[in-house]
Image 1 (cartoon, rainbow, N blue to C red):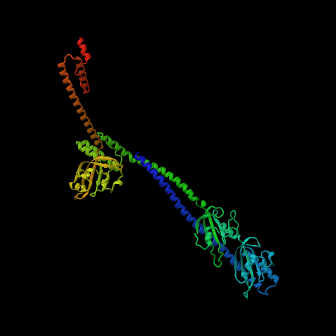
Image 2 (image 1 turned 90 degrees about the horizontal axis):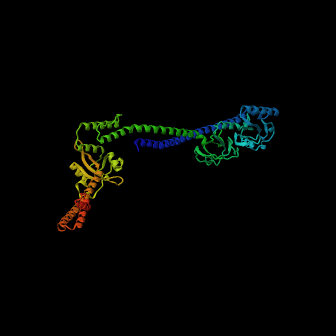
Image 3 (image 1 turned 180 degrees about the horizontal axis):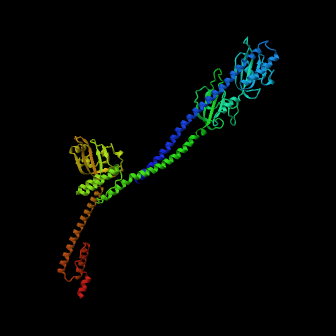
Length: 578
């Protein structure tokens, strides 16, 4: 695989990993920040709305007391001040005027000490006894004792509306004794309007001290003064007196959807101490996190675009980096084939450009200089041989890429490891052969003392267990002051040479065996030829035997690759006939 392809694949892999991780990280980080801001905003809004409700009810509390302190009412209720008919007209007129200036009130009435309604906005109530109205009667008795009073939210039996009942005592102007009571039914829609001012996506629930719904938007299946939120985890903790987390992701009671909820308890305002109400504000998580979802989509699109751009940049950069190396590699092959006129095209001034210039300088010097084969071999070894530098303690300090490629290691796998890791410990080392003592026992000390070792056959041990024969040389490297900096070791792969030597040995053995066979054949030929000659002298008449023996001689000569010594019998007969 080409380097440029590897670079592109690497960049794409990194982009595929980093981009989603970055997007997910940004998403959850932004989500956490947004949730925190939403909770803070909702909490601030709920606190503000609760405070506004307390202020409205405080104003009604103050208004009922101001009405009770009206000088006309105090004057009328003081005995003997005015005739009864005139007094009732004055009280009713005062109630009507006060209802306009204060409140707002669904019902406003003045009750004497006997519990009889003497003035009211609802004329049909005048003359009735307060005990006919159970909810209102609860406000009458505390005021009759001289204390201002306010109730929790109740359903008025007079108007049929939700209301908070306020009452205050009317005291005589002179005696300061309680002469009557002013009772007002506060118009609850004023509070509902405050809750309606909440953002449309928020669900505000005003709850009483028992966790029952008393105000806010009414969802399907809920009803004021009947629907309980006591099972809500925030409300439950508040009712139990536990410390609550003001903001949390929870589940809406009725609709069973995930919401972000905040809960604020009522603190009251000034002299109005409240009824221990609470305001629960919920916002659906899907609605709250909609901006984050849009951001996640945008981030995904951006990540894809960035990945495409990075791929193109990686391709361009890879091509820019690889092209000079490819040219250099081609030129090296040409020079290696013997053409020293080849030159590298230098396009840049970076390290690759410097390498190309150095290579061109080297080939130029080679063209100008007559060199020996050993010198050329040394140049080749310098370019291609394996190199390893070890410390005096036999620890690998530096390696070149040729060593890594040959043995299948990465540089980081070798640096800091003992040199014995890449050399095969053969049996000869135990016999203390000098060439095999290197890196074993006192071998390092001997090498440092001698200063060098050259052309020693050793065996590399590759990562996969493969044994690689090499010619090994080592030299002690010293600085200007003579201190040892390391031991430079160079080795060249002699696998092919070993294979050639084996072929030569095998060929020589084959030739030796062949020569021995030829010697035996020649000896046998000599013996048979002698017999033929002796036989011809003794038995000239035994032509048939002679022909047979000559034929055998010719066959032996044919096996030796030589020409026939005797004519074939057929040719002899033909000559005799002539």
